[in-house]
Image (cartoon, rainbow, N blue to C red):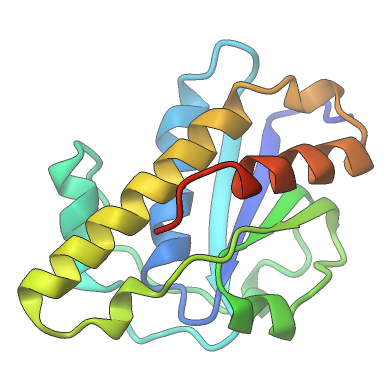
Length: 167
């Protein structure tokens, strides 16, 4: 059980789209949580050179300023302790199935919006990813995170994913 802020790590391959959106949502909404503050970071197994501009755009369209961020490699956060590690793509789950310094783990596999290169299709895909992650983040933040044992936390987070809309 956490004594400081509840810490969440969101993992993806490139750390340029889904994991950045997840980190942003947890960072903003977790800071406002009355049950206890949540802090978030994100990283990737093969980080992209920059955050996807459509990720920045969908966040800005939803009131979250996220420009100027740089994708991080998972090695950059390996020594940090986390209460929960969330993988958001199958490649990241395969590359880092267990994050050694996380008490609990869950996989929230979502389609990669960065697969879309035509601007209108990309905007639609990023909006869908934002909505899917937003629903999951809200449901997770409503839980008594600090009081949950690791196995119960992993199970609850997996159930949130299973009962949430796909991206």
